[in-house]
Image 1 (cartoon, rainbow, N blue to C red):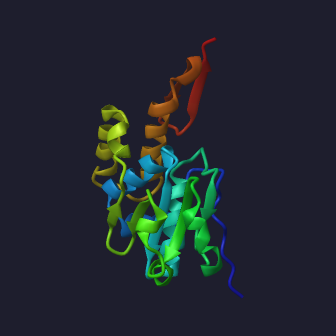
Image 2: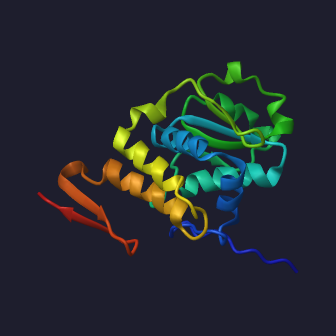
Length: 191
């Protein structure tokens, strides 16, 4: 009997425990991860494709996990079945994994403005410039943290994205947020 533990969506993922994150990091570059992250924050329509079902599913789930402590609130399908291909025409945000076999039946021109990542080739196609819309200090700090030597094991990659989120939304609405070295987010409300 084979038993697999489902990833915990209520905690920060870490390597090598989270196999989805490990697959995502091995499949795409840090710059591509940053583009997908920015596209998620802008609530775009995002397609991730691969020849391998495990890679499609892992990349979709890992991209969602990097939003921690937030989660994707729109259409979310880690592996798109053929019967649901019409969902790709929906004019609302989605995060969908599409196996290469099904991508051959889809015209990206018909789908419209969509962020498309081929996880096998690390090629991303997007009509948006979402990464450039994020503050420069957030992008440069995220790039620096993701490119540090020894990066990869533990929770250093998800922590880098969490720090970027704190920088982006931490000071909104009269509150201040600080990320402590022990991994705790401290929020002070200043009403």
